[in-house]
Image (tube, rainbow, N blue to C red; front, top):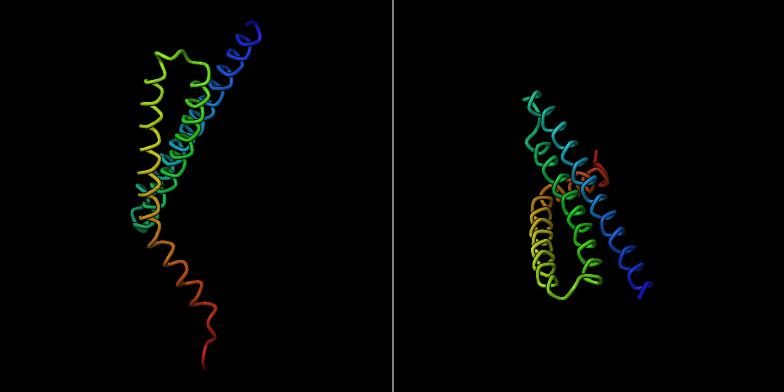
Length: 130
């Protein structure tokens, strides 16, 4: 029984550490996005794609942070009494849905950027006829 209680404590500390990592990732990403957005706000000549890139980068980091949070939730399900499992499942389902829709939006928004980049790259590799 003592070994089980020790394992529960270790898993709880591990889950807290992972949640702290998620908070750091999200906090730093938000700070980075804020600085970049302020610079774009000051530089009114910036291309709209630069604004979109700030948003997409923040979205990618938010997805990473949410995945860390989900990992902590999964660890907690191993040591949580059964009456709390439903709450953890609901939170995990919500976070999974958020990750899914965030990644879907990122994919949709980055497609035109990726297609333009590929067109430029392919265009520069084609031989020039004099």
